[in-house]
Each structure stands twice: as C-alpha cells, then as structure tokens.
Length: 113
Length: 436
Image (cartoon, rainbow over all chains, first blue to last red; front, side, top):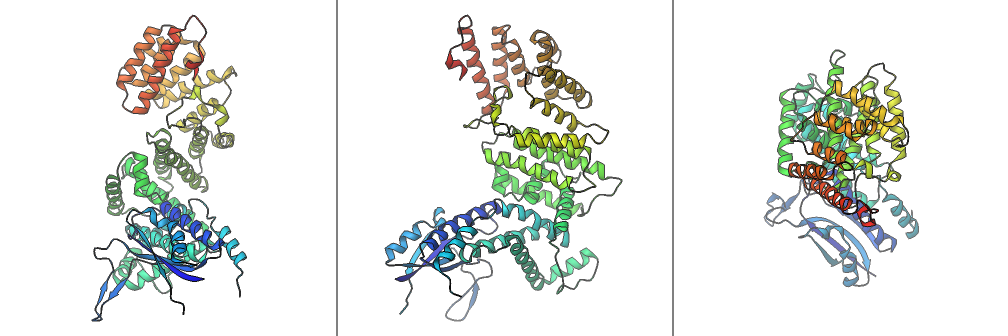
C-alpha cells in the first residue's frame, strides 16, 4: 500500500472566527480523520500556523510569508495509506476544509523507496 | 510501544467527544484571568491569546488526539503564549510593570488558573463591563463577547445587525473601559448594591434580547437565555452578590426559559401563551424557578424581579385553580405601583379580564388610551372577540397598521383569519380547519 499526503490550502482564519466556529471546525476535522483512522488508513498529520512564517529564496533572502496575494496557503496536511491516488482523493473529498469555496486539498504520493 | 489499530481507533472515537461550547466557555475564563493579571488596557491581548490557544488546539487535537484533560492543556498553552509574548515584547513588559506598580520577575510570572481565581476574575469582569459609564447596549455587546465568548457574527445575528456595526460598538466600548480606567475589582461595600443593580439589569436585558428577539436564529436566541442564566450563577456563587434580587432574577429567568420550546413554532413564529402545548414546558426549569423564588423570599424585601418571578410562577399553574388569576392580578397591581409601564398595564388588564370578565376589562382598558400601542389593540380585540366581532376586527386592523415586524403581522393576520371563521360559522359548530 502506498502513502499519500493530503495538503490543505486555505485562507488564514486567525482572528476572523469565533471560538464556537473553531470548535465546530475541530469537531468536523476530528470526525473526518477519525473515520480514516477507523479504516486503519491514517498515518499522521498536523495543522500549520500562519503566523511567524518565513520564506527563504535562492539568494538566502528571508521574507515574512508566504502570504502575498495568495489566499490559499498551506494550512495543514495528513498522510493516508491508499492503493491509488484515486482512493486517496476519495478521502480528500470528505475534508471539511473544502467547505470554503476557494479552498483545495492537493493529493500527492509520497516517495517511499 | 506498539499500537494496535483497534485501540487506536477506539481512542479516537472516545476523544472526539469534546464537551459542547468548550471553547466558548474557556474563552471567557482565559480572557478574564489574563485581563485580571495584566490590566484592562490589555484586554485585546488577552482575547488574541485566547484565540491563538484554540487555534493551537485546532492544529493538533484532530491529528494527535484530544489531551486527557483538554482544559488544563488550554491553560498550559495560553501560559506559554503569554511567556513568549513577554520575552518578545519589551514594551509590553515595561507597560505591565508600570500598570501593576511593581517590579515583576517575568521569568517567574505565574498565571493563576485555579477555579477560585477564574470565578473571581469572571465576576470582576462582569462588574467592569456593567460599569455605569458604559451604555446598556454596549454592556450587552461586551458581555456577549468577553463573558460569553460570542463571535462578531453571532452577536450581529442576535441583534439583527451586521458585523461592522458590532465591531465598532465593541471597539468604542473597550476604549471606554480603558479611558475610564475601570479596574478589575469588586466594588466596595458602599457601592456594591447599586453596582449589582446595573449588573442584574444588563443580565435581564441580555435575557430579554434572547427571549423576545426578532432574530430568526432560534439557536442564538436560546443561547442568549442560557448565557444570562450562566452569568447569574456567577453572582449566586459569591456571598457578596447572592442576595434577594439575584435569586429573584434567576427564578424569573428559569420560569420564562421553561417555555422557550413551547413558544416557538417550527417555522420560527411565536406561539402565544394561551395556545402553547404545555407538554413542551420544561418541568426541571420550573422546579428550579420555584427553588430560587423560595431562596429569594428569605430576604424580607421585595423587588420587581420578585414580583415578576411570582407572576411567572402562577403562569405555570393549571388554569383550573381558582386562585390563579386573582393572585396574578394582585401581583400586577403591586408591580404597577413600583414599576409602571405600558406592558405591565396591558398584562394587568388581561389578568383583570380573567377575574372580572371581559366587559369590565374593556372599560378598564379604555382608561389606558394607548392609541399608538399595537398590543393595546390586540388586547382589546381579544376582549371584544366574543362580545362584538365588528369592534374586534376594527381593533385587529388598527393593531396591524401599528406593528413593525413581520412576525407580529403574521400573528395578527392569523387572528384576523380566525375571527373571520368565527363569524362565518358562529351559529353552527366551529369547523376543524379553524382550529388549526
């Protein structure tokens, strides 16, 4: 079985949502991941903080970022076990992050050998 | 240690059950405790720290599982975030030292998240927010934000307003807290009763906002009522603020809340008391209401809350009890003598009609001459209903022309239809479709 990374891209929601909304999101995320865990297909994952991020370019020049004009920034990922990219994409379809109109989940195979 | 897939999935299943509103509840506690530690001028920092703390939870709990003690986890993370903020922000450190008027060893700064300190901080925050220098409207907004952890959208929903307006109102209110240099402390003995009165008023307004609100969002409405009750619990848990009026207000809110489910139709329109399904009344809340009513009667004083709670109590009593309406009428007489308002006067007429009959009540009502009040005409229409249907219809039309909201108009339209049915079939028995 191969491993796939599911990358969540969305807007930084910090400061824009209420505690209740955050808890709702968390519940949805837990239910989604819990379902993958129950199928024994979950490997790991994490959310990523938007604040205090840097981008380093080839000249070793460091900028705050990566939030120029890009609304959809990497906000977290999970790694799942799947036989094919299509199967992994099926998992991705259930991702709560997709409730946001411009948000995406990118599915990429992880090189294991 | 090797994890078998089975135990792992079981763990996850159990851990997704986070108590409802945990973040909202903890938001209020975090903000109160942090603001008490650093002064009210840093209230926004406290809010930011609280939000960031939940964001950290959002970024880890779904992936690593919920910690065994979620609340303790949140407090530890909040403490670390404050420490990081102190290390990074020198100006903030100087500011705090000046503010607290003492040298602080920031390496050893400890933030006290004991139950006692949380309760004290929240109570002091309640008094700060309900400071007389802040307008009632802003007090409610601040209370919802700071003490109930509501977001801008949720507050806007409750007030039928928009995010921007609420945001501005909150900003102005926070500036006011700062400018007036309102301290997070309990008022002294000399002013506590007066200040407590303002606090109770604000809580009651918050409750009424939920109970009578025009907002279509039934969930938000209900939550406002629950939050008002929670804030009153804070007051009842402190000997300084647990008095006659606090108990009476609690009783009143419990009685009213017992009918929350019964007074709302599935489509969100209001069902009047007379038409409510009594099986939907919450008996547990009625019992609680009765308990707090008894508690408040231990003080040998009275208050409008106490009279209103007593009226609310009698409303939970079966109509067949002969003393019911006589008692309610007597209580309205008492209420009118201490707190005269159109609503009270109209409610008194209703009780009057139950005791002395509609003809006498119409005479009594006409003395009020509330020609611009739609409820006045609705009441008259009801009293005329069986006596003079033409007059009843005229009153309903006047009421309709005076009312401002759609849900009110809906109620009156229904009454007009009912009356039409009643007229058509007044000689024969009332057909089923009119009873719907």
